[in-house]
Amino acid sequence: MAPGEAIVALGFFASLSAIFVLRGPLGRAIADRIAGRAGAPVDAARALEQLDEVQHRLAELEERQDFTERVLSQERERGKLPARE
Image (tube, rainbow, N blue to C red; front, side):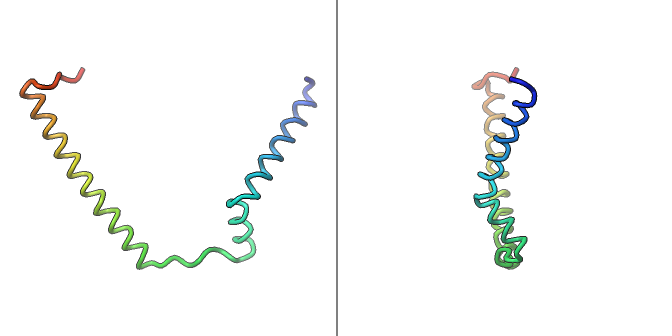
């Protein structure tokens, strides 16, 4: 295959890929943004509520991880678990 043919083939596949991506949700979002029809405004109160929920769940996960680490270290000290290498 000559270098020119490779460039043509690469351009063809790049064009097909661009068409495929731009005809999907990403393309619609870009078109809406250009036309000034961007999505609904963000509800700040709802966003803060969701953030608080995520922070609470993260704190719970941290507590569970700390508990698990303490239990595993106690088991390792008792000799029930092999030492890490």
